[in-house]
Amino acid sequence: MRGLTFHGVGDVRVDDVDEPTVLAPGDAVVRVTLAGICGSDLHAYQAGDVFGFLPGIRLGHEFIGTVEAVGGDVRRVRPGDRVLAAVLAACGRCAHCAEGLPSSCPSRSSFGWAPRAWRSEGEIQGAQSEMMRVPFADATLDPMPEALAGPEHEASLLPVVDVLSTAWHGLRRAGVKAGDAVVVIGDGAVGLSAVHGASALDAAPIVSLGHHPDRLAVAERLGATATVSSRDADEIREGVLELTGGMGAHVVIDTVASQTSMETAFACVRAGGTIATMGMEHFKAGTLSVNWVDQYLRNVTITGGYVPGKRYFPELLPLVEAGRLEPSPLLTHRLPLDDAPDAYRMMAERVDGVIKVAVAP
Ligand SMILES: [Zn+2]
Ligand SMILES: [Zn+2]
Image (cartoon, rainbow, N blue to C red; front, side, top):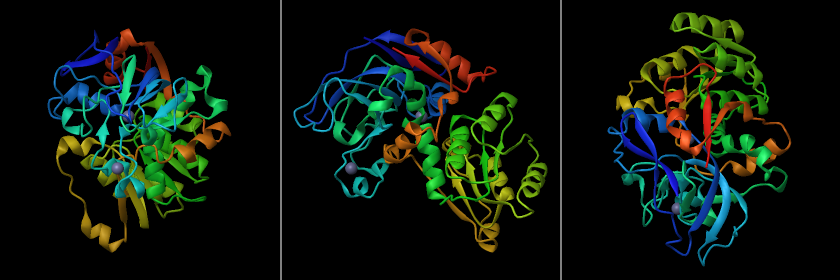
């Protein structure tokens, strides 16, 4: 079969690779029908050496598809079922899984990540491939709602797997409720998802901060009530204060997580407010400094964290089915799997009009 393989920084290719098989009784093999390219795949593409990627690793962790085969212990899905997969495989039985944090499961493996993130037996390969082996299938796959199982709904479902779940995790961790002023830093797919999720939670105003006019236009389409495009922290702060009655935001969702974005978050958050960091730039920086004096004096809560697998699928899927969430504008391009290296280039170079590219095997 064909699979998108990491060969080195800036070098990914679609190669002939071995087809996965059921290795353990809890496994499923899924035929991938659509796989997303994520901002975190770009981290691998641009700095895979830092993250421990080795040549031969296949990338991708956002996928939907059809179950092809299951092991003897799998109960919740059957061959032929249309499914969404979590971005990680976790046991579903340990204390962390029971507490809704499969991302901290001691048996957790992240799809399409470096081998040090494989804790299940065997290879845990990436989803930009024709087929995927999925460990702990009962805890890792959810059947699609029947009304959304057709191919015409794939562009609305794929964002649920990661970017919308990640954004929703930030919104939930920050306790966003109706009427809250929300500022979202970053106009990538997670930032736009946070804007969209905040609008489904009836937050207002919702202010999108970014640097790309085409993406800020999508932010408005997905629920932003205002956008601010500036690299100057004072200017951003003034803009946000003006939009929030001089108070600042109840919640800032920082989808970048760099030193600059953290400082912007503090500039925008009101006293007693919450900052949720949902980005990954700090992986590259190693550490960020936080203004703890400001945090203390103004009672700012800092939260955020790694998406807890498919924990939010049961909340998000009914909202998609009801049309309250319609995230398909995030998927701006769909290419055949064989063109995946071009898709990486388009995303890495931030070609105008490109937000997220999905590949169809
Ligand atoms: Zn992702
Ligand atoms: Zn577990």
